[in-house]
Image 1 (tube, helix red, strand yellow):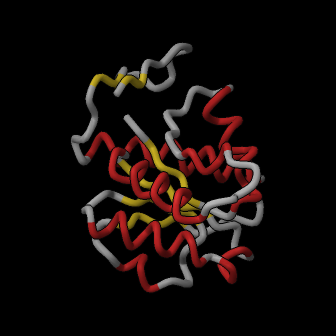
Image 2 (cartoon, rainbow, N blue to C red):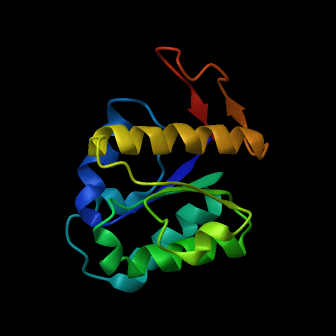
Length: 149
């Protein structure tokens, strides 16, 4: 299972935590870029990562959607590739009415950590439903999940 995450860059440290400490199969290379010197190279990496993803997870905290331009490009690209998209916080966007977008409303009572973990769990669930898994351990709750490929 491969998950491409998209959000504002200030959420990158939490995505890194989920990937590195919680073993979520996040493949988004943008979360590791500290300074962007070449935007053309950055977009190529983002599109390549979306190409190889099984599912795209989009996160908005309800406030950062005002500056959400990059994510909208990523969402459009993923939709063009018929990738399933799970999201939190996109209820103000008409894109949530697309058959391949599965949105959950942002919950002000949950922490960013809890919201993003919920999003990743839903991404895995939708990836399973779409049958795009390749050598994934089905029991996600196991202590050492193997998300190869």
